[in-house]
Length: 212
Image (cartoon, rainbow, N blue to C red):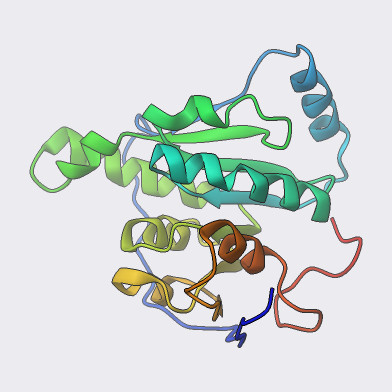
């Protein structure tokens, strides 16, 4: 879209976050029964080649923002037709995306529990286990479409080799990305997110035509 300014900064280095070994009681990965469009979605995942990427969309909240982000899942499916696409979302908003044919699974987190991290033993234990499970999921590409500290931290915890977000994200979230792009903040939210998924040809980290 007109008015965009881009610059790629791949290879950014951040402080390593330690692995945790607590029981993964808080991480929830949901898949769904093989009916209708969900059946074709599962069949696609089961027949995909072993090198097909695992992709995570990080857009935890709120209701309106999650709804506006659904088109990004469709665009990622177009770019990576054989990919396994997951969506990290707060439990309260999971129904907005969980049955969409472009999304293979949702990763749920307890927003209320996260607020108690460091103040409650159980919340701290579950939060550390959630972090460990994000790392063990083995994502290849992660897109932070919220651009706040919390979503950036979730992105970093995956350890994915490609972690993409806005260079002008708020709350310092950009420090968690390997690939950062400047997008005009005056664009509509949907246009900004879509631009992040489709940087100009030749931009470091952008998918090759027909990849996936």
